[in-house]
Figure 1 (cartoon, rainbow, N blue to C red):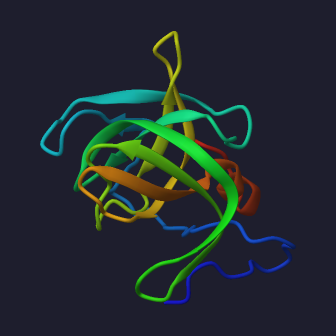
Figure 2 (cartoon, rainbow, N blue to C red; figure 1 turned 90 degrees about the vertical axis):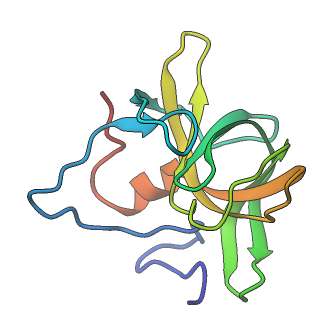
Length: 157
């Protein structure tokens, strides 16, 4: 209900993050759904991107409501953005793409890069977008922020 807040013991804002618990008998896998919203196809996450995103980086996003969208380009790092509901993203990243946009319900979905060898690298976590149907601006959180804040690492296959 507030947007980005300070994490205990930290000295910087780290975007939009939440930690969830997976209870038995539920399981997780190091996979990202690929394709449209009704696709059952998925690919293994091979690695975590080797650095924080930088302006000019390209990536894809995966959302439960919009499916896989590629052609994103990082335009700005360490941004602050206020959503229409008053929540504020701090320490985030801004990206754009032509065409369809991520939509409400996609938040928390993956941001990933398809490398030249076809392997997938986890890059971030969807925060939100402007929802335009032709030219889209979206905001996301660096996956390195999540692995810095909590124990563990990105699951890979």
